[in-house]
Amino acid sequence: MRRLILPALIATLLAPAAHAQSGERPEVATAAAAVKQNVVTWRRDFHQHPELSNRESRTAAEVARQLRALGLKPVIGIAHHGVVAIIEGGKPGPKVALRADMDALPVTEQVDLPFASKVTTTFRGETVGVMHACGHDAHTGILLGIAKSLVKMKADLPGSVMLVFQPSEEGAPDGEEGGASLMLKEGLFKDFKPDAVFGLHVFSTLPAGQIGVRQGPLMAASDKFTIKVKGRQTHGSRPWGGVDPIVTAADVIESAQSIVSRRTDIARLPAVVSFGSIKGGIRYNIIPDDVELVGTIRTFDEGMRQKIFTDLKNVAEHVSLANGATAEASVPDRDGNPVTYNDPALTARMLPSLKAVVGDANVIEPPLQMGAEDFSFYAKEVPSMFFFVGATAPGIDPATAPGNHSPKFALDESSLDIGLRALLQVTLDYLHAPTATVSQR
Image (cartoon, rainbow, N blue to C red; front, side, top):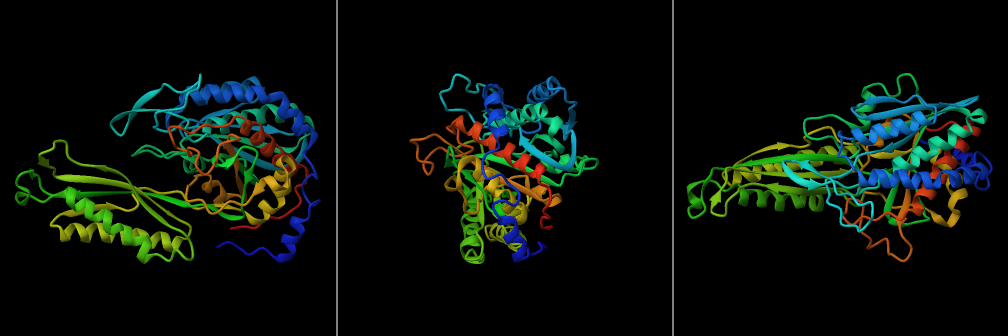
């Protein structure tokens, strides 16, 4: 259970001069100018050579090569392709971890860029394109830029910084483990337990130049489910000779819509149940034996989360029985991501740092996001803050711009500079003034 923050502590943390500069640190602006072209080059390289979750071998090798060139000693192979390096400051101080995700998506790129991805691979038995349709190429480039910046100033740096280049944020393939949870399981914080963890994500629903952050819950818990509806094969001209799993699956999907609309108190917190894949049959005149349904559940409350699990399983099983079929409902079919939670005191403390980079008016509080992030696993271990960096170019309405995960997702590269400066400012402000106590969960 999250402890309440005392009003007096909040007031102290919100005081403008408490823990952040009144303006952008001059060393941030200098560092950002020095590495700007490097970050663009790295991002474009990663964009042109995307790799799916748990397959980031080239990306990891390039990240490790760049870190070694800076004089660092990266540890490789954590959670398959994770890369971790530590920058030791020349002065005593706190420990901070910065995270960037590296994996891409099974999406065929439709953006006309000279460095557009032409990569294809096999995903769930089908040939698909591979694209950095979520911006992880930007995150990786930004963190490499921060690494280069911090190495140059490490003699005067209080404390130490862990750089976490994480694989498989989008989720490990079926039957595999990966991502933040596996990095922690394999001992990421065993010998280096940070006092705070920071991360960012480029976001299409914000214009370039804006930053979005909110205290407490930010992004939803995410759970994947699989429902296998089993009927009995028959010829399409004689449906009475078998049990039709396609009609039954359609009935399951329709009935499941009432779980959120009629059984969940969405006046309190939002929730989503969505079906993303239907597979069954191969020929127009043969009713198949079974149909597989795959989808996602998004929630912000653990009680609502568990109730939706139960409701969906009941709908799948009982609707199938009513149609003469059966259902194997794996709800969820793996451990999902918890809610991405921003520590309230830490977020309040670092808010002036974000404003110092883009100005007060350009730091906004976004609504709760139904998207999910496995950064949430770090936030369960250590006080953390995760923020959004606007990625949509000027002149394009962010409300209608192609979203993250779209084959037309287009990153305005000015967001690379904003992201680097914001994360570097947050890091330096925290390291130079590590006096506040943040809330524990």
